[in-house]
Amino acid sequence: MPDEYQVPDMVSNMPHEYPVPDMVSNRPGEYSVPDMISNKPGGWAFVDMIQIGQMSIRSTVTQVIINVLPVNDHAPVFVSPVKPVVLDIAETTQPGTVVVTVKAEDLDGDPIQYSIQPGGDADLYFSIDSNTGEIILVAPVNLDTKDTSSPLTPLSIILLVEAKDNLVHTTLLDVTVNFLFVNEFPPVFDPTSTAVVFENATVGQRIATVTATDNDSGPDGDVAYSLLESDVPPDMFFIHPDTGTISLACSGCLDFDIRNFYTLVIKAEDGRGEKKTRCFLMQIKLHLLILFLPQ
Image (tube, rainbow, N blue to C red):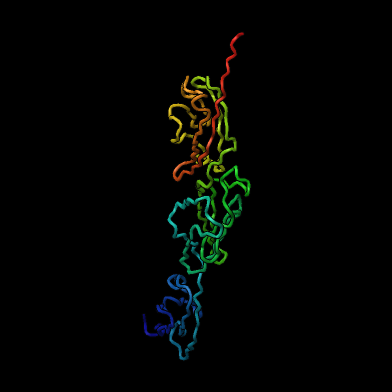
């Protein structure tokens, strides 16, 4: 470039310096900012400019301050937890528990606000800390239809978590929460404790039916019955494991003169995994068979 077109170097307080010739045009008094500057947020620069053109007797030097302003051109990106986000939560989880923490980042460095989009059951059971991204259970979970102390909770809820930067760009994250059954309640027997059978009853004779109820729903609420060891011969009585019906397992084995009652120890067992049990005593009384002979 001829000497008369040379331009003084730029003095800059920024970590990068930008050559003035790239910022000026061939038209007197005009200049432009190259892309390399517009992509760098913040900061400012001093530019010393002189008249561009034929050498003249007089020249003027002026100072131009260029403020480089940040542009919000990136949306937040969720970085944790790893997608897909599926949570399994026990139905006994207490309100106030932090079930997961989500985190989003923004390449522009803008602060991020978190929220849960309303709809369905999401905002009934969960809230989110707008600053930290902690998702919190806010209501008790009830999966047991027999327990009417609180509304029935669905087995699965999908949360639409929103990350927003400076109220401009928004990114959504699906969080699926599955609620798991917990065996909370033991079986409870109905109070019937006695039954009667004639001493001449035959094998298969139904004697009584015991019933135990369990307030758990699903498999945890299923009850199975059995007879525990006692002073009663094991081959004398039988109990159906599903119905609780007690029947005689032998013929000609009952004799009022030898023994007029039997006490059975009945066990009710529920669920799966950590099963809960209850025991119950039922007394079976024999009725004497009286034969009337003709006179």
